[in-house]
Image (cartoon, rainbow, N blue to C red; front, side, top):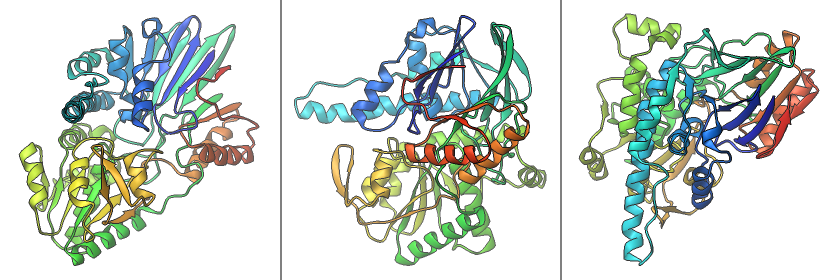
Length: 465
């Protein structure tokens, strides 16, 4: 087998790894690269392989940095199956269409400005029609089921505990008279997170491709995260301001809603309005309700009591554009949760434009902000940031909570890998999906577990198994 690391190599976006084995070409993930706009557009537009020669694709989960370039893959000539879980398939039905809509609408907005400036128009990366067509290639496989997807290659999904439908990908390979198991973590979840089950152990792994997003950091506890959420909201409420929360539509939005429900219900927070202003997040929340097979025991118990953990009396889901715009005219304290989580598109840009200049307000980050994204610029303390191509002064309070991360941290990653080491078969580990410092810190921890063969691949690096 030859592995070519075509994305998420020494960075956290654009997950994409090409396997060549027994004459077949298998792609693990096809995510959008996010960063500097022109570089990101060029990287995403021009796939580093001929899509027509690809036989099959395996998708770990629906986050856009793992799934978001699938429409372009299909538009470029890919004809094969894309294997994933049913929950991921349902999420992609919402997320890929939303991604295409955002690209079309943002392109239209930018082109109006370019026309006034006498500049030529730009095109979206892909269209809604192309996103819709790409969904016909998705084929579902549930956790624990095994299927041959290529000559001598069998696929089994295990629950990754990251977001709804996220999977650890196990590939059992027979080639040249030998057998081995390759595991791709996708994004690995945490133990004890709300709503979803904990990550499952994948037995008898010989070679591991592991994410390293937080390989050099530790998260706060979930209890600490909830307490800080309560403190930030209370302080902003006392100033008479709004709390603007950029949040990923899948997973993070539902986790924040879940905790706000409990905090307001317990009296820790005042009874202020909470708005989820993201059509995608609303659609995703409905999909969450359709997949009780992935819930943990606590959420199952709440549902059995006929309570809705993702809805309460002060919560409003705003779908229409007019409802979203009306939030700009609110003068009372409130909480607005909106996508995208890294502030790279969508309605969050309008909320930032209208609120980031008011010192009474707070922008609260609850997820990872990749290098060169608008979210990273705001979080690192830039005094002025570009929104829709224009500079905006930052006067709002900037806060962050990392305890809500759906990614395993340094100790949690090592705890999971320790279980693989205990099986006695782990020979080599590849650290991907992390900044260089995170990958290096995780690699050192893996060495201390007794695994000597560790590689931090560079972009487009080829490795033979």
